[in-house]
Amino acid sequence: MLDSLGNLKRTHYAGALRAADADKDVVLMGWVHKRRDLGQLIFIDLRDRAGIAQIVFNKELHSDAHRKAEELRGEFVVAVEGRVLRRQKPNPDLASGEVEVMASRLHILNTAKTPPFVIEDEITASEETRLRYRYLDLRRGKPAANIALRHKVLFEIRRALNDLAFYEIETPILTRSTPEGARDYLVPSRLHHGQFYALPQSPQIFKQILMISGMDRYFQIVRCFRDEDNRADRQPEFTQLDLEMSFPRQQDVFEVIERVMERAFGVAGVAAKGPFRHLDYHEALRLYGSDKPDLRFGMELSNVTESFAPASAALHIEGNVQALVAPGAAAWSRKQLDELAERAKSIGARGLYTVKVTPEGVASPLEKNLGADGLRKLVAAVGAKPGDLVVAVAAKEQLPHSDTSLGIAGQLRLYLGDKLNLIDRSKWEFLWITGFALFEWSDSAKRWVSAQHPFTGIFEEDLDKLETTPWACRSKGYDLVLNGVELGSGSIRIHRQDVQARMFTALGLSDEQARQRFGFFLDALTYGTPPHGGIALGLDRIVMLLAGEKSIREVIAFPKTTAAQDLMADSPSPVDPAQLDELGIALKDTKK
Image (cartoon, rainbow, N blue to C red):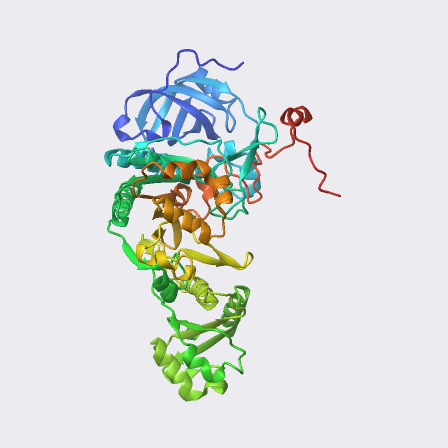
């Protein structure tokens, strides 16, 4: 017979008990984590969201409670009345380990089946099993701590922005489809057959309209939806910190975000002191082969195309050659070099060219192509020292309007930094990337497309290039990067309707197409739009980094798999044909 909770009220969280609570009478509630029966004494570890406390049932002192404790099994839900006592031998593995609770009464509130995996921090269950039983997975210490950290970070962000005079304003979840680079999630309308709402990929247009509305400073912790292929740091639904300001300079946006990051990271005990470093987009590519470089270690790239010129024909090299110096890697074995070569080829390198620098001189298969003197010049050009390994790569395929060798070398830099333990995991290196191009070449569409979105501002001195040389136009966009992860991007927006019209023309949109997609926004632009700008930061990624996780799924309460499925809720799923009839929808047989 199960007990009723009745008027019983919890006085403390089990995991929050400390030595200062000794001799207090307490009521604890939670789950049976472990049970140990020693006959006269029964011990259970009682778990709640704050952690674990040890409970003692003494047959001699409290026989009724001891008798009921004999029935307990893992994950039973219980309430315990008792007194906090100092432990003779503290348990250093528990935050509450200096004390235990001598139980006087036990209330068994519910029983439980044997879980499919043990509720412990370190488990061997697959991610699929964990997500299918997510309500059990969240009882574990690490996932529960991740959710608590997420709450603290988001709550502090709200406090910080309130202190900076921002309004929190909700924008619509059901809106119109305005394609922004990824596929929309569409929602059919029951009242308007054949018409659809779209779930927002971001509140971009609405937050700009809020600036036109005179709200001046807006923010929102908002759910966004994109129907795209998933990966570790991507989900079909995700959470952004979205904000916008009227009459800002670029630096004003930076200062706001730096203040917010300082406070948000502070709740996790991380010092994030502004101002953050700035780096031009092209300089970031040149030095690190990435527009989101990890600055926790050096190993900058060097363009050594000229050094390889005498051998370019023999080695079938097209385009540029990038090199980097791997400190201490001259001692690497043939097997390690072969693995490095395979890694390079898997990311698009034509081949891997290495030079070992030793106290006796240089050694490399390249000697037959470059000669001994050429090798010495190459080593000098990259600044390698004895014990170092010079690693050079060229791209197998050349893409229009880009140097593909940079991206390959940038990925090898990260690989080597990890293999050589060069990355200082205690560092938090924030970076603003600026100086982006306004347009980028789309190889699939064979035309120039917006590098960010069509509302990104353009440098005034580049306006005359919009119709003639769009690739030369500079963007007023910017990204915030942390430890090699892009946290988010933003820009100073286009606020003039004539410039916005020219931008649409440059993107190949007719007046009719622009009005069809963005008509209500274009109308709003005609009623006195102030200069404005903002940013959107991925909160899932921020919490992921603070929690020391490698996937945002670990910091989301109910995430989807990489196949965009919710295994716990069995979603997506078929719906009743009557629902489809009501919406005027007939399903097409795609198996034919």
